[in-house]
Length: 163
Image (cartoon, rainbow, N blue to C red; front, side, top):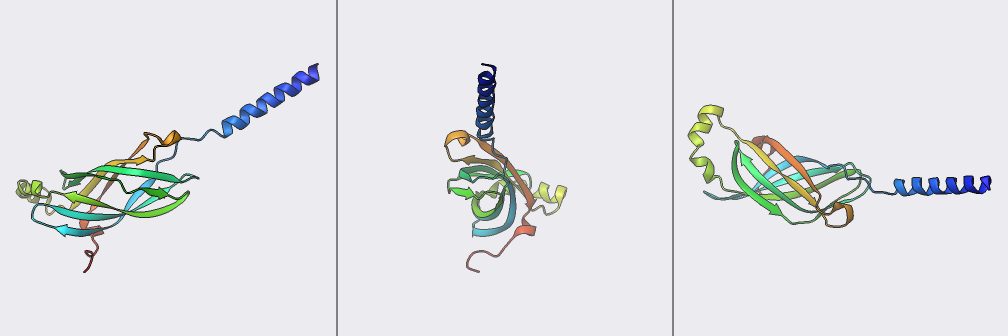
């Protein structure tokens, strides 16, 4: 009887350990960086910039991103917001390059341009802040991973498309 009870306890413990090991973990946040910025459309009040990004997925599994929503700032002033719905799948334990178009309204800077030049000199600093949202399935449903990209446009500018 003791041998059977001991065997049953060992089997139950083994099943508990196996089931705990198979529970998926919360995904670690991908690390984003800006590879370059390309001006696509330049108008007096509306502009479109393509931000070429790199995302490193530190997880041992794919991360399917459904959409990215964001706010764009130039010299500390909100100049645009957006949503990209182009799905991107980040490969496990590796880098994935993709691009995101940012539509801006730099006319918001015009009223502040004198103050910006006086206080900061010619400031070309940008900030893109937002969340990556994963494909809605299982554990990833509703999960948003925040990101905050900062830099100087002049350091990241690449030639415009077609030039």
